[in-house]
Image: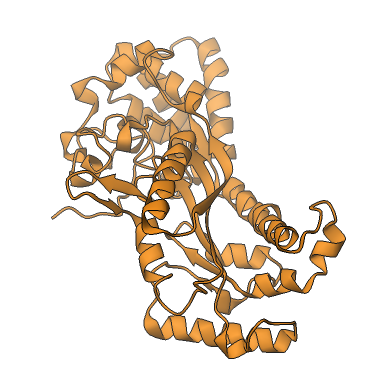
Length: 372
Protein backbone atom coordinates (compact mmCIF):
# COMPACT_ATOMS: atom_id res chain seq x y z
CA UNK A 1 0.00 0.00 0.00
CA UNK A 2 1.28 3.46 -0.89
CA UNK A 3 2.42 5.48 2.13
CA UNK A 4 -0.15 8.23 1.50
CA UNK A 5 -3.02 5.71 1.35
CA UNK A 6 -1.79 4.02 4.54
CA UNK A 7 -1.59 7.38 6.30
CA UNK A 8 -5.12 8.28 5.17
CA UNK A 9 -6.36 4.93 6.46
CA UNK A 10 -4.67 5.52 9.83
CA UNK A 11 -6.18 9.01 10.09
CA UNK A 12 -9.64 7.60 9.31
CA UNK A 13 -9.32 4.83 11.93
CA UNK A 14 -8.18 7.30 14.58
CA UNK A 15 -10.78 9.90 13.62
CA UNK A 16 -8.18 12.59 12.93
CA UNK A 17 -10.26 15.05 10.93
CA UNK A 18 -8.14 18.05 11.89
CA UNK A 19 -5.21 18.38 9.43
CA UNK A 20 -3.06 19.81 12.22
CA UNK A 21 -3.46 16.63 14.27
CA UNK A 22 -2.50 14.57 11.23
CA UNK A 23 0.63 16.71 10.74
CA UNK A 24 1.57 16.21 14.39
CA UNK A 25 1.01 12.45 14.54
CA UNK A 26 1.70 10.87 11.14
CA UNK A 27 5.25 12.12 10.37
CA UNK A 28 6.56 10.76 13.70
CA UNK A 29 4.97 7.37 13.10
CA UNK A 30 6.26 7.31 9.52
CA UNK A 31 9.76 8.14 10.77
CA UNK A 32 9.59 5.23 13.22
CA UNK A 33 8.38 2.99 10.40
CA UNK A 34 11.22 4.00 8.10
CA UNK A 35 13.84 3.76 10.83
CA UNK A 36 12.78 0.43 12.36
CA UNK A 37 9.28 -0.96 12.23
CA UNK A 38 9.05 -1.69 8.48
CA UNK A 39 11.93 -4.12 9.03
CA UNK A 40 9.74 -6.59 10.91
CA UNK A 41 10.42 -9.84 9.06
CA UNK A 42 7.03 -11.45 9.68
CA UNK A 43 5.15 -8.85 7.68
CA UNK A 44 3.87 -10.32 4.43
CA UNK A 45 5.03 -9.20 0.98
CA UNK A 46 4.27 -5.51 0.41
CA UNK A 47 2.97 -5.05 3.94
CA UNK A 48 4.33 -2.19 6.04
CA UNK A 49 4.01 -0.79 9.51
CA UNK A 50 1.61 2.15 8.98
CA UNK A 51 -1.09 0.10 7.29
CA UNK A 52 -0.54 -2.71 9.84
CA UNK A 53 -0.97 -0.16 12.62
CA UNK A 54 -4.22 1.12 11.10
CA UNK A 55 -5.66 -2.38 10.71
CA UNK A 56 -4.56 -3.33 14.24
CA UNK A 57 -6.07 -0.22 15.81
CA UNK A 58 -9.31 -0.78 13.91
CA UNK A 59 -9.89 -3.91 16.02
CA UNK A 60 -10.19 -1.76 19.18
CA UNK A 61 -13.32 0.14 20.17
CA UNK A 62 -13.01 3.78 19.14
CA UNK A 63 -12.63 4.91 22.76
CA UNK A 64 -9.71 2.49 23.30
CA UNK A 65 -7.67 3.39 20.22
CA UNK A 66 -5.86 6.37 21.71
CA UNK A 67 -4.53 4.25 24.56
CA UNK A 68 -3.60 1.43 22.18
CA UNK A 69 -1.67 3.88 20.02
CA UNK A 70 0.05 5.20 23.15
CA UNK A 71 1.41 1.69 23.76
CA UNK A 72 3.27 1.99 20.46
CA UNK A 73 4.32 5.60 20.92
CA UNK A 74 5.43 5.47 24.57
CA UNK A 75 6.30 1.93 25.62
CA UNK A 76 7.23 -0.20 22.59
CA UNK A 77 10.77 -1.61 22.54
CA UNK A 78 11.79 -2.73 19.06
CA UNK A 79 15.22 -4.33 18.64
CA UNK A 80 16.21 -4.11 14.99
CA UNK A 81 18.41 -6.52 13.08
CA UNK A 82 21.11 -3.84 13.00
CA UNK A 83 21.00 -3.47 16.78
CA UNK A 84 21.11 -7.23 17.29
CA UNK A 85 24.05 -7.44 14.89
CA UNK A 86 25.84 -4.80 16.95
CA UNK A 87 25.41 -6.93 20.09
CA UNK A 88 26.82 -9.94 18.24
CA UNK A 89 29.83 -7.84 17.22
CA UNK A 90 30.43 -6.93 20.87
CA UNK A 91 30.14 -10.48 22.20
CA UNK A 92 33.60 -11.75 21.31
CA UNK A 93 35.83 -8.83 22.44
CA UNK A 94 33.69 -7.67 25.36
CA UNK A 95 32.70 -11.00 26.89
CA UNK A 96 34.49 -14.04 25.48
CA UNK A 97 38.01 -12.58 25.39
CA UNK A 98 37.51 -11.03 28.84
CA UNK A 99 36.62 -14.41 30.32
CA UNK A 100 39.77 -15.98 28.92
CA UNK A 101 41.85 -13.11 30.32
CA UNK A 102 40.22 -13.64 33.72
CA UNK A 103 40.97 -17.37 33.71
CA UNK A 104 44.60 -16.93 32.66
CA UNK A 105 45.11 -14.27 35.34
CA UNK A 106 43.47 -16.46 37.99
CA UNK A 107 45.39 -19.61 37.09
CA UNK A 108 48.80 -17.96 36.89
CA UNK A 109 48.59 -15.31 39.60
CA UNK A 110 48.95 -12.46 37.10
CA UNK A 111 47.36 -9.11 37.93
CA UNK A 112 44.23 -8.58 35.77
CA UNK A 113 45.45 -5.20 34.57
CA UNK A 114 48.58 -6.70 32.97
CA UNK A 115 46.74 -7.21 29.69
CA UNK A 116 49.83 -7.51 27.47
CA UNK A 117 51.27 -10.29 29.61
CA UNK A 118 47.96 -12.14 29.68
CA UNK A 119 47.43 -11.89 25.91
CA UNK A 120 50.87 -13.36 25.16
CA UNK A 121 50.64 -16.13 27.73
CA UNK A 122 50.51 -19.60 26.05
CA UNK A 123 47.46 -20.51 28.15
CA UNK A 124 45.46 -17.69 26.56
CA UNK A 125 45.92 -19.20 23.10
CA UNK A 126 45.32 -22.72 24.43
CA UNK A 127 41.95 -21.71 25.90
CA UNK A 128 41.01 -20.01 22.62
CA UNK A 129 41.49 -23.28 20.78
CA UNK A 130 39.76 -25.30 23.52
CA UNK A 131 36.54 -23.24 23.39
CA UNK A 132 33.33 -24.80 22.08
CA UNK A 133 30.37 -22.69 20.91
CA UNK A 134 26.84 -24.09 20.68
CA UNK A 135 23.78 -22.19 19.43
CA UNK A 136 20.60 -22.71 21.45
CA UNK A 137 18.17 -21.54 18.75
CA UNK A 138 18.10 -20.22 15.19
CA UNK A 139 18.50 -16.72 16.67
CA UNK A 140 21.96 -17.46 18.09
CA UNK A 141 23.70 -15.86 15.08
CA UNK A 142 26.53 -18.37 15.35
CA UNK A 143 27.89 -17.62 11.88
CA UNK A 144 27.88 -13.89 12.61
CA UNK A 145 29.64 -14.51 15.92
CA UNK A 146 32.32 -16.54 14.17
CA UNK A 147 32.90 -13.82 11.57
CA UNK A 148 32.96 -11.11 14.27
CA UNK A 149 35.83 -12.93 16.00
CA UNK A 150 38.13 -12.17 13.01
CA UNK A 151 39.22 -15.78 12.70
CA UNK A 152 39.61 -16.48 16.42
CA UNK A 153 36.66 -18.92 16.30
CA UNK A 154 37.11 -21.66 13.73
CA UNK A 155 34.43 -23.64 11.92
CA UNK A 156 35.43 -26.73 13.89
CA UNK A 157 34.62 -24.99 17.21
CA UNK A 158 31.09 -23.80 16.53
CA UNK A 159 27.77 -25.57 15.93
CA UNK A 160 24.34 -24.05 15.43
CA UNK A 161 22.63 -26.51 17.77
CA UNK A 162 23.32 -27.85 21.24
CA UNK A 163 22.41 -31.42 20.38
CA UNK A 164 25.50 -32.94 18.79
CA UNK A 165 25.48 -36.25 16.99
CA UNK A 166 28.29 -38.68 17.75
CA UNK A 167 29.89 -38.24 14.34
CA UNK A 168 29.90 -34.43 14.60
CA UNK A 169 31.33 -34.55 18.12
CA UNK A 170 34.11 -36.86 16.94
CA UNK A 171 34.92 -34.51 14.04
CA UNK A 172 35.10 -31.48 16.34
CA UNK A 173 37.34 -33.33 18.79
CA UNK A 174 39.67 -34.44 16.00
CA UNK A 175 39.97 -30.87 14.69
CA UNK A 176 40.64 -29.58 18.22
CA UNK A 177 43.54 -31.99 18.64
CA UNK A 178 44.98 -31.07 15.24
CA UNK A 179 44.76 -27.36 16.08
CA UNK A 180 46.62 -27.88 19.36
CA UNK A 181 49.39 -29.80 17.59
CA UNK A 182 49.72 -27.08 14.96
CA UNK A 183 49.81 -24.30 17.56
CA UNK A 184 52.89 -25.85 19.19
CA UNK A 185 52.02 -24.56 22.65
CA UNK A 186 52.88 -26.36 25.90
CA UNK A 187 50.33 -29.03 26.90
CA UNK A 188 49.98 -31.01 30.10
CA UNK A 189 49.29 -34.18 28.12
CA UNK A 190 49.48 -35.39 24.51
CA UNK A 191 47.27 -33.46 22.07
CA UNK A 192 45.33 -36.63 21.20
CA UNK A 193 44.05 -36.74 24.80
CA UNK A 194 42.91 -33.12 24.93
CA UNK A 195 39.25 -32.09 25.19
CA UNK A 196 37.34 -28.81 25.08
CA UNK A 197 37.48 -26.77 28.28
CA UNK A 198 35.22 -23.76 27.73
CA UNK A 199 31.63 -24.33 26.57
CA UNK A 200 29.78 -21.25 25.33
CA UNK A 201 26.00 -21.58 24.96
CA UNK A 202 24.72 -18.76 22.77
CA UNK A 203 21.23 -17.37 22.22
CA UNK A 204 19.59 -14.11 21.22
CA UNK A 205 16.89 -13.58 23.85
CA UNK A 206 15.35 -14.82 27.08
CA UNK A 207 12.21 -13.31 28.58
CA UNK A 208 11.54 -15.60 31.54
CA UNK A 209 14.43 -18.09 31.66
CA UNK A 210 12.04 -21.07 31.89
CA UNK A 211 13.21 -22.53 28.58
CA UNK A 212 16.75 -22.78 29.90
CA UNK A 213 16.18 -24.14 33.39
CA UNK A 214 13.14 -24.82 35.56
CA UNK A 215 12.13 -27.17 38.33
CA UNK A 216 9.10 -29.38 37.72
CA UNK A 217 7.40 -29.65 41.11
CA UNK A 218 5.20 -32.55 40.05
CA UNK A 219 8.00 -34.69 38.65
CA UNK A 220 10.52 -33.38 41.21
CA UNK A 221 13.25 -32.83 38.65
CA UNK A 222 14.93 -30.10 36.64
CA UNK A 223 14.05 -29.47 33.00
CA UNK A 224 15.26 -27.20 30.23
CA UNK A 225 18.15 -26.74 27.81
CA UNK A 226 20.79 -26.25 30.50
CA UNK A 227 20.03 -29.60 32.11
CA UNK A 228 20.16 -31.34 28.72
CA UNK A 229 23.49 -29.73 27.86
CA UNK A 230 25.13 -30.65 31.14
CA UNK A 231 23.87 -34.22 30.78
CA UNK A 232 24.62 -34.77 27.09
CA UNK A 233 27.66 -32.64 26.34
CA UNK A 234 29.55 -33.03 29.60
CA UNK A 235 28.77 -36.73 29.90
CA UNK A 236 30.58 -37.59 26.66
CA UNK A 237 34.23 -37.34 25.60
CA UNK A 238 33.93 -33.85 24.10
CA UNK A 239 34.61 -31.81 27.26
CA UNK A 240 37.44 -32.22 29.76
CA UNK A 241 35.81 -33.41 33.03
CA UNK A 242 38.79 -32.20 35.06
CA UNK A 243 38.75 -28.61 33.79
CA UNK A 244 35.69 -27.01 32.26
CA UNK A 245 33.60 -23.86 32.40
CA UNK A 246 30.07 -23.50 31.04
CA UNK A 247 28.82 -20.07 29.95
CA UNK A 248 25.42 -18.90 28.80
CA UNK A 249 25.79 -15.87 26.53
CA UNK A 250 22.56 -14.00 25.80
CA UNK A 251 22.46 -10.96 23.57
CA UNK A 252 19.24 -9.70 25.22
CA UNK A 253 17.49 -10.83 28.41
CA UNK A 254 15.04 -9.45 30.93
CA UNK A 255 15.96 -9.02 34.57
CA UNK A 256 13.28 -11.62 35.33
CA UNK A 257 15.09 -14.15 33.13
CA UNK A 258 18.52 -13.29 34.56
CA UNK A 259 17.33 -13.77 38.14
CA UNK A 260 15.52 -17.00 37.24
CA UNK A 261 18.46 -18.57 35.40
CA UNK A 262 20.98 -17.64 38.08
CA UNK A 263 18.75 -18.94 40.89
CA UNK A 264 17.75 -22.28 39.38
CA UNK A 265 21.00 -23.09 37.57
CA UNK A 266 22.88 -22.63 40.84
CA UNK A 267 20.59 -25.12 42.53
CA UNK A 268 20.76 -27.58 39.65
CA UNK A 269 24.57 -27.62 39.45
CA UNK A 270 24.92 -27.81 43.23
CA UNK A 271 22.55 -30.77 43.39
CA UNK A 272 24.43 -32.58 40.61
CA UNK A 273 27.91 -31.69 41.88
CA UNK A 274 28.73 -29.76 38.69
CA UNK A 275 30.60 -26.51 38.13
CA UNK A 276 28.17 -23.58 38.16
CA UNK A 277 26.93 -21.89 35.02
CA UNK A 278 28.28 -18.40 34.30
CA UNK A 279 25.70 -16.08 32.74
CA UNK A 280 26.56 -13.08 30.54
CA UNK A 281 23.95 -10.71 29.10
CA UNK A 282 24.96 -7.96 26.69
CA UNK A 283 21.70 -5.99 26.80
CA UNK A 284 19.60 -6.49 29.96
CA UNK A 285 16.01 -5.26 29.96
CA UNK A 286 15.15 -4.05 33.43
CA UNK A 287 11.90 -4.71 35.29
CA UNK A 288 10.55 -1.20 34.75
CA UNK A 289 10.15 -2.01 31.04
CA UNK A 290 7.26 -4.40 31.80
CA UNK A 291 3.67 -3.18 31.58
CA UNK A 292 2.04 -3.19 35.01
CA UNK A 293 -1.22 -1.81 36.40
CA UNK A 294 0.54 0.56 38.76
CA UNK A 295 2.18 2.56 35.98
CA UNK A 296 -0.25 1.94 33.11
CA UNK A 297 -3.75 1.43 34.60
CA UNK A 298 -5.69 2.55 31.52
CA UNK A 299 -3.63 0.47 29.11
CA UNK A 300 -3.75 -2.62 31.31
CA UNK A 301 -7.50 -2.24 31.60
CA UNK A 302 -7.79 -2.33 27.82
CA UNK A 303 -5.46 -5.31 27.42
CA UNK A 304 -7.60 -7.19 29.96
CA UNK A 305 -10.72 -7.01 27.79
CA UNK A 306 -11.90 -10.30 26.35
CA UNK A 307 -12.51 -8.73 22.94
CA UNK A 308 -8.79 -8.12 22.52
CA UNK A 309 -7.67 -11.69 23.10
CA UNK A 310 -8.07 -15.08 21.44
CA UNK A 311 -8.20 -17.96 23.92
CA UNK A 312 -6.48 -20.25 21.39
CA UNK A 313 -3.22 -18.57 22.47
CA UNK A 314 -3.60 -20.22 25.89
CA UNK A 315 -2.03 -23.53 24.94
CA UNK A 316 0.06 -26.13 26.78
CA UNK A 317 3.28 -24.29 25.93
CA UNK A 318 2.03 -21.16 27.70
CA UNK A 319 1.09 -23.29 30.71
CA UNK A 320 4.75 -24.25 31.18
CA UNK A 321 5.36 -20.63 32.19
CA UNK A 322 3.00 -21.00 35.15
CA UNK A 323 0.03 -19.03 33.76
CA UNK A 324 -3.12 -20.25 32.05
CA UNK A 325 -3.47 -17.18 29.84
CA UNK A 326 -1.08 -15.67 27.29
CA UNK A 327 -2.74 -12.26 27.61
CA UNK A 328 0.30 -10.80 29.40
CA UNK A 329 2.81 -13.12 27.80
CA UNK A 330 4.60 -16.31 28.70
CA UNK A 331 5.30 -16.47 32.47
CA UNK A 332 3.39 -13.19 32.86
CA UNK A 333 6.38 -11.16 31.64
CA UNK A 334 4.06 -8.46 30.23
CA UNK A 335 6.71 -7.06 27.89
CA UNK A 336 6.20 -4.41 25.19
CA UNK A 337 9.07 -5.97 23.23
CA UNK A 338 9.48 -6.85 19.56
CA UNK A 339 12.52 -8.47 17.93
CA UNK A 340 12.91 -7.79 14.23
CA UNK A 341 12.73 -11.48 13.26
CA UNK A 342 9.79 -12.42 15.53
CA UNK A 343 7.87 -11.10 18.53
CA UNK A 344 8.60 -13.13 21.69
CA UNK A 345 5.57 -14.65 23.38
CA UNK A 346 6.79 -13.04 26.62
CA UNK A 347 5.30 -9.81 25.26
CA UNK A 348 1.65 -8.89 25.72
CA UNK A 349 -0.66 -10.81 23.40
CA UNK A 350 -1.92 -7.62 21.71
CA UNK A 351 1.49 -7.24 20.10
CA UNK A 352 2.08 -10.80 18.88
CA UNK A 353 -1.31 -12.47 18.28
CA UNK A 354 -1.10 -14.62 15.09
CA UNK A 355 -2.61 -13.20 11.91
CA UNK A 356 -5.26 -15.91 11.64
CA UNK A 357 -6.63 -15.38 15.17
CA UNK A 358 -9.76 -13.38 15.94
CA UNK A 359 -7.63 -10.58 17.38
CA UNK A 360 -4.26 -10.30 15.66
CA UNK A 361 -1.16 -8.52 16.89
CA UNK A 362 0.55 -5.46 15.51
CA UNK A 363 3.67 -7.60 14.99
CA UNK A 364 2.20 -11.10 14.47
CA UNK A 365 4.29 -13.92 15.82
CA UNK A 366 5.12 -17.20 14.13
CA UNK A 367 5.23 -19.88 16.81
CA UNK A 368 8.02 -22.47 17.03
CA UNK A 369 5.43 -25.00 18.21
CA UNK A 370 2.64 -26.51 16.18
CA UNK A 371 -0.51 -27.54 17.96
CA UNK A 372 -2.14 -30.76 16.71
